[in-house]
Image (cartoon, rainbow, N blue to C red):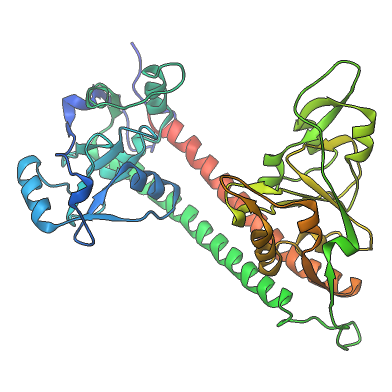
Amino acid sequence: MEKLQPKLRFPEFEGDWDRKILGDIFNISSAARVHKNEWAESGVTFFRSSDVVSHFKGNTNTKAYISFELYNTLSDKIGRVKKDDILITGGGSIGIPFLVKNNDPLYFKDADLLWIKNRDQFNGFFLYSFFLTKSFQDYLNSISHVGTIAHYTINQVKNTPFTYPTLPEQTKIASFLITVDEKIAGLKKQLTLLERYKKGVMQKIFSQELRFKEENGNDFPDWEEKKLGEIGDFQTSSIDKLSSPNEEEVFLVNYMNVYRHERINNETKKSLQKVTAKSSQILSCNLLKGDILFTPSSETPSDIGHSVVIFEDLKQTVYSYHLMRYRPKIKIDILYSHYFCNVPKVLKQISQLATGSTRFTISVKAFSSIIINLPTLSEQQKIATFLSSIDEKIEKCQGQIKAMENWKKGLLQQMFV
């Protein structure tokens, strides 16, 4: 007989957990229909699946409301959502939970969300955490069709297997997981502050409100105004994702590699897509130390101009036709080149020069006309060293967040059955 006990357990608890289906324990229902023309400018918060997903990801979403009068009418029919109840997405992104944290008036969209009415003998955060576990994800996968599921229905929620301990053990597990979440939230707050500080200090540096000094304490020379085309050359590519016989195999840097600001070097290039290219293409689209790759197109003008700097010569590596390479003709500090095109003055020009209707693009000629203010090499190095130190702190914080989230994922797998 299967033992219903978690791998990781607090020492004061023992014995098997109970296993039932959610429908045998909880009242599970949807809501009465609310039409969009019944939404209000203010009043009672009206939750949709997008609100739950945004909240789960730590983002904000444009709130919707219904009037108190409509809320009272509907709630008199189906009851009122209360503290420790669970709303779970039944459409769109399936099976994402939201824990109701107070008794403030709240209503929700029918079909999009399903309502699990909690009972006194169940800890709300324990129940919420169950929906984050591998066992729940395995259940979702078991009822999916070809890897996807269009809806998580009331019947499927009711038939979801749920294994649980006594209320005191639930509360102990919940308290521990809340502490872990608080540590993750603290790290995320720290990351936000660091990113905000970097953005503010970059604005001051590149507007020259904040200047560095030479080693002897003297001011650096004035910055020079240059067009990108004066100090470097842009090059497009004709290399696609296809492979053809009688061509050389190469690693291909794609649009998303640059859009995600990935590190691209001789070690990480091994994970890039392999394609083939002609010798002439490999020669004209090669990547050398100091090159900058740009995304020259996007669905919105403001999203053009993502970039990565190539920090070492890359053998047998090229870039796709969705990208543009910039190769400086003058000496630019390589760390500084990581920053000087990611400032409001440059990004604003890129956005203004982009053309298109459904997808916007900036041409080589337009990119070459963009004006930058360039400090001396010595001041570039000072700026780059300062900003890199902030980036190191940001990366360290991001690493700590990822490690904590992975640790929590492991805890959920071991502390639940």
